[in-house]
Amino acid sequence: MEIIAVHGGLDTSRDRQFMEVLEEAAQQGYKLLATDRVQAMEAVIRVLEDSPKFNCGYGSILNLDGEVEMDAAIVDGVTNRFAAIAAIRLVNNPISVARRLMEKTEQVIVAGDGAVKFARQQGFPEANCVSEEQLDAWQKAKESLARGETPTQNLFTGLEYHADTVGCVVWDGKGLGAASSTGGFSLKMPGRVGDTPCLGGGIFASPTSATVCTGVGEAFIETLTAKYVDEQIVSGLHPQQAVEFALRRLADLKGTEGGILTMDAEGRIGSAFNAGRFPVVFLVNGKVQKDFKPVNLKPELTLN
Ligand code: ASP
Image (cartoon, rainbow, N blue to C red; front, side):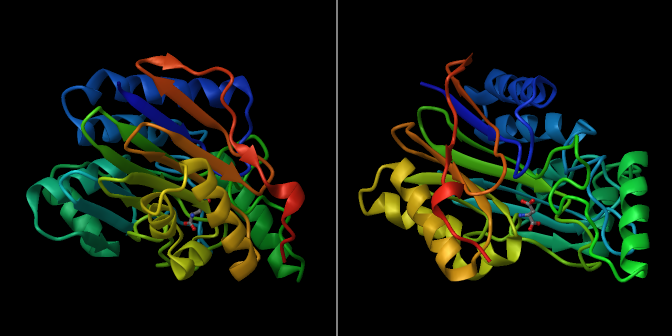
């Protein structure tokens, strides 16, 4: 059995235009899953980074200085290998840089200028990641700030018809893996790093489970939420129960929004969120499970 689940981040619409890209990403990964789990995850995330619709790669949300700085990570639950790129600029596919780091070095996280330098050394060309739409939204947000007003732009997507951080979990019949990529959130501090490249915070994979998270990264890091999900599954919980426990805990401890997607070594999936929207595509043996929807806990959780 081969399974891939892909999410489009918090406050991402379930409109066809977004679901189709998520489905395409899952299908691209499926083509490679039987031969190479890590390559398959990279392929899933690359489709989403290449789409201007998602908050990763080109079309990422801008930081306070009007720049795109991206985080991406990949983790293999079988080999226990992890690699992440943090606050990288001027590359199309941070996830591919992360995979290269995993394959070519023994180091697990590179950030900022060092990450850009590594990417260039590895032959990744300079690329503009700032889209016109995100630049416009950023200019409006900065004008609001200058007037002393709170910007109305969506924290996670930046634009009304846009999507957020992306992530996937895979099961190839032998083992699990997780990968994720993001531009972070709107008006973040330059150099800020979120939970996506933090193992145990926003991403985790082991022989037991693979997990990716989306939401305010600081909250996921401080609560080690992705690792917590794994611990719940190790202790015998169904993945769905595990993500619901983890989201309730996140809301209790941090009063914040989030979305979590997990899979266990039986290929059972868990996904829940407590925000506006959280689209997930679930592919089993190449077939999209059309009725699948993550559980919305928003009505029962009180947030700050
Ligand atoms: N978790 C990401 C971050 O904090 C943002 C997101 O998921 O929207 O960088």
